[in-house]
Length: 333
Image (tube, rainbow, N blue to C red; front, side, top):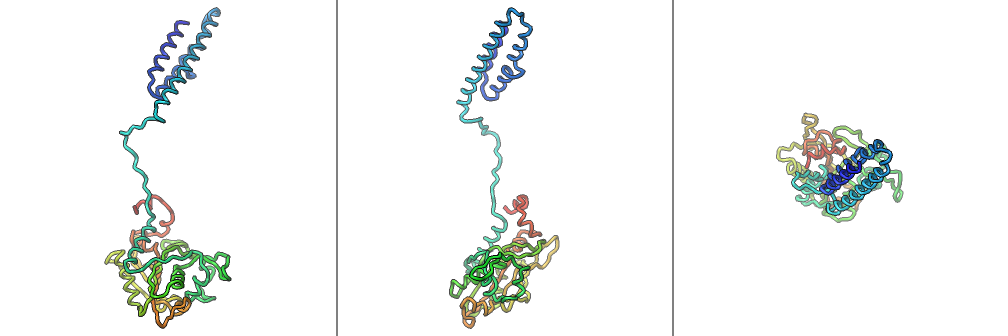
């Protein structure tokens, strides 16, 4: 029995010396020091040793166990010190492609639209999303009691500022008021941003969406200038085949006013879809910001960014733009 234990020790130390990596070391530990290892098996056989030899055999087994455990610990530390900080990397293995990020389709659309109007001479203006009643209504010729101010059609905040109720802006026309307050005419700006209306969500409506507001103020501005600007934009962005129309409408802040429609493919069928409103700036709006309507004239328009993106990229449901489904968004890389 003593000789077989010596042979076990010799074989174990030889194999340990030959173990070249962490996996081989672990396999050695399991084979010799594990619960069902060879050393455990030898200790189990101690019950069959004659009583007179048991003390010597038991002592020898404990010595071998201590020797192997110490040798294993030393070998493991030495192996870890030479492994250069971790498992080796096989540089011949093909790598995984990096998941590159990309701009949201709405952000891309905004940049493309602003770039086109920039080529037409429009600069960019900005304004807050939380507005007061003066900029959202009064200066836009929407007096108290007007249906457009109904709480059912707006997101009022509950607070006030200088006695004026605060609300989430319902249109980017508020920015044209702020731009005219700060700048003497002539003026040519576009403003892009989120607007909020409690609309029922469907394929073409959402309670939060983006608008681009355009304003041009100068002497002798006419509807011809407005129509030319919008049609040039549509054909520059969508191509010469773009179908656009203007039809008479009414807005408190423009006179005359018109709706701008474009043909879009919705659920497999081509339909006329409203992109926004436009018209010549109402004289009362000029008076609210200190412009002389006898000297200055201008046009304004507000277009829905989501509907422009839907037409450009063949998106048939506005709700998809806000679901953050990566499978949908990856299409617009």
